[in-house]
Length: 201
Image (cartoon, rainbow, N blue to C red; front, side):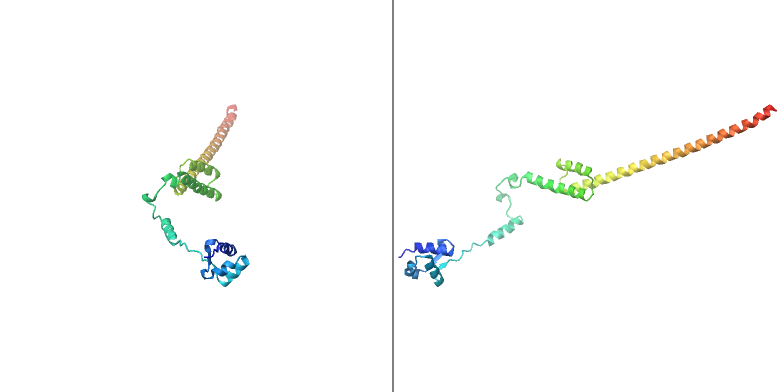
């Protein structure tokens, strides 16, 4: 049998593939052995004596099916687990996710003027101190704190209104007392003046 090693190498170069992908027609071995240039190889390819083999199919259908099942939570029982719980999903990753969610919520509330910068800072520090375990708890805390602030403000306003009212009442009382006193002084001085001429007579 004639060695067609060189022809296979040239054909692989012309077809831009590996040597294992080149098919040389075994019935035309003598003609193939005569080809010693790329130009000759191109002619043989055109004639169909040299062919590039088709790519072998490696189906991913089963892999896709398994991946889809895993995404639904299948095949993840105790028997399928290799790493520790910490290695599979580190607590630090969970912490980072929670911090980002809560801080994003605080920033959004501050932007929309739902909370002022003082409440934002107070809650930010509490979030860092692991006070709120999730978004719902933080939202409840914000609503409670806002309600408490509103109640305190209302009480303060009522107290201030009562103080103002009391002040006005005291002022009115003082005015009336002053008026009465002034009136009383006038009444007492008038009879004294009238009594003096009688004493002279």
